[in-house]
Length: 118
Image (tube, rainbow, N blue to C red; front, side, top):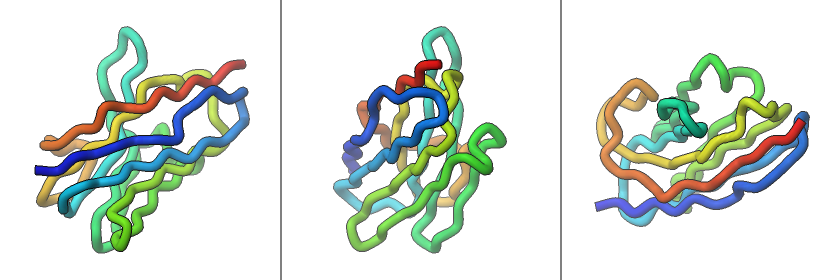
């Protein structure tokens, strides 16, 4: 069993930055960030594995950076140049096995809200 606790969400103006954190209680090899905007389907943002490998959705490339501190069992998402369309609830998730946003994740956090105003 893995418990995930997100933090770091908030409200920023377009062009601003936020850093999300996800603390994992319990071990997993793959952790990822997903988001869901009102009226839209949940979408993958980025993943980070224990070996340092990462994957990104096209919408996140160049603006978002995922990193992982294995000693703290924590996944981070640094979000720069935020846009109003990045507004969503951001969820942390974990799974074992191949690490990619198109895989099915087993464990989910409660989410942290990110709101970007124009």
